[in-house]
Length: 381
Image 1 (cartoon, rainbow, N blue to C red):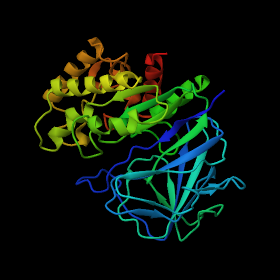
Image 2 (cartoon, rainbow, N blue to C red; image 1 turned 60 degrees about the vertical axis):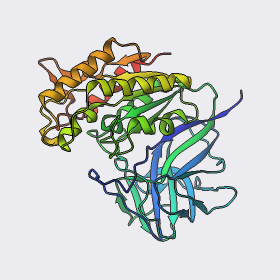
Image 3 (tube, rainbow, N blue to C red; image 1 turned 45 degrees about the horizontal axis):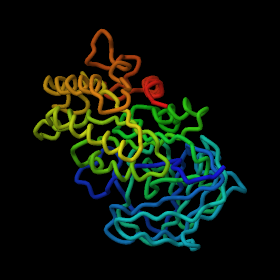
Image 4 (cartoon, helix red, strand yellow; image 1 turned 90 degrees about the vertical axis):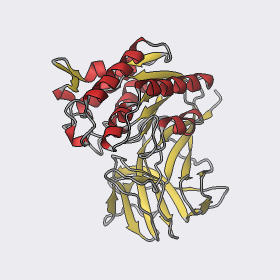
């Protein structure tokens, strides 16, 4: 059987130069080793690493990088530490606005493999492309420690930096599902370090099929507005359409287009504009042979913690109109009715208490499992 490269991990990048941040601010590195833990979604005989400087203002130089199997915390499995090269060189310089793809690395993986990427940043990096909510601790230590078996005095870091993805060389017919969304997809509200985000749980559910699931959620992301990541309509090509092997996309966006304008003192976004944007994503996916699935917008009644103006009568009305279109329209191949799954039957505008992480917006671990099961049942063959 002929093998091909398919995506096994992705991390949607956010610019460190955005005027607003959520909890975890951007940062840079100088003469430090950054150790990042990722879980792969597919089996392969070889892998390749993708590093990004998409939002950098200057060239980014990484002195060297190595990959190893993860043991625990900042420790790697002895004997698995392997060099990652770019054009045969250990050092790589990435121009602003570009991505670097490594040479193939001879390291076999299985679904659910946890890997550690250790990179030495000898020269100042400047503010780094990052993914604010990794929900998987990384580790930062002084100097060049990329080959050390452990970093016992390392500083934990909550975000992911520079690492945009990993591909594996494996079966050509493996399904690859891109979970494209906001904080619900990103996993906010679930327990950090336990892989309880809905895409993680969906990957476990689909493992018998050999499918990989890519988490392309960004907390705070909107379909039509920038800040907290590029708008969904702008990043869709980079994060979904050009990713090798993607067969399905699950679009879970719209909640922040409804709620954030009131928080940010911006005019409300009409439901018709959100509908047009979602329909455009489906059409673009189909043109690339990708089967689009859409999720209904989940309840948010009582979300005072999100800020004044998020939960308003107008916002609730827009959500109902949007969900009516999603349920009755034919723009997408299938509908994952997350609203129907997560809402409280006695108060349909609110999350069910069993699924509420406490902020009345984000599902907890049990809610994420319910989301994963709903998406799995909706995915077309």
